[in-house]
Length: 184
Image (cartoon, rainbow, N blue to C red; front, side, top):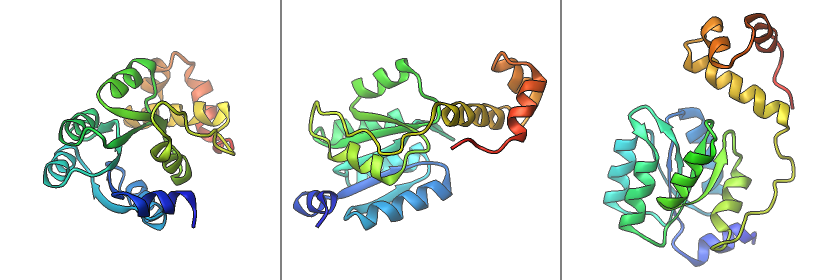
């Protein structure tokens, strides 16, 4: 039996996943169920808060930015309802101030998207004050940069000029980056 399945079978293995990216939400839910967790999903802050109020889970994986607000609200509500719960913030918008705020409000870790199920499990099972193990194949710096550019591009309504302005980059340079495949 794997460490994750053993941990999940010995304790309350209830897990709430809150993310507005439906495809990612479904993939992560299936992967976590396969690791022994009893998964509930929500696709908004309101649905996440309702799930916490109904039955506070032992674990939570919450996206930082959701369509109707910040996932930190769900983390804070879970910490109030069940102080020993372990929660993780996932985001494509990593910055130090947000990470510090998430940890102050109860998150035990802060992972950048796209995080895989192994990274999520490692963060959930890490003991208090213990850092999860380094992933075997972390994203390259080029891939992280590409992911950030793609996210800003989508947030700007796929407007190249606006994206270039916000990223302080020349428009033609951005067009060349967008035309290439994602780095590994």
